[in-house]
Length: 221
Image (cartoon, rainbow, N blue to C red):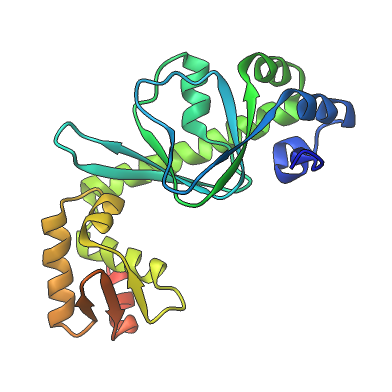
């Protein structure tokens, strides 16, 4: 990727003056992370801004008991707002980032970030607009976990995962982590969906038998 101008990939960098973009290309470095590897973890203090050029990263948090909740995902063309927050505050991560696919990322050292953010309004607005959007997303996660009906949320998640598909491959534990609840709760609701002929289940596979019925549940909140 050395011959590619990575700044074309991101809204906040493609609009920068050519001289600034050349400086970014000279300053930042490109890294590659394999699917399933940890991108960052608790107790690490980031010293660089993280732009995802290609791939997808799942950001999650775990309790002392081992219960996990997925906070958000970083997709290609986005920056990781948790990295931004921890870097600015000079504090360690309190969550974990895992590569859900092979990942290509651009890492911009904090010194270069500080200078760019102070000098270029376009870049600063890009970073903090992304930060604001993700904060709103995380507040919605908290609201869903605290107040949302689990059958509605599970139906929505199944339909999202199964868009255009007759079946999906996943586990009760993965769905529990996605929705911030216990595996036993997911199993109970899935069994209820099965009894109502909305889905059928086998080991690691959920097949759809009545998507319109699931959609009715998803829209019932």
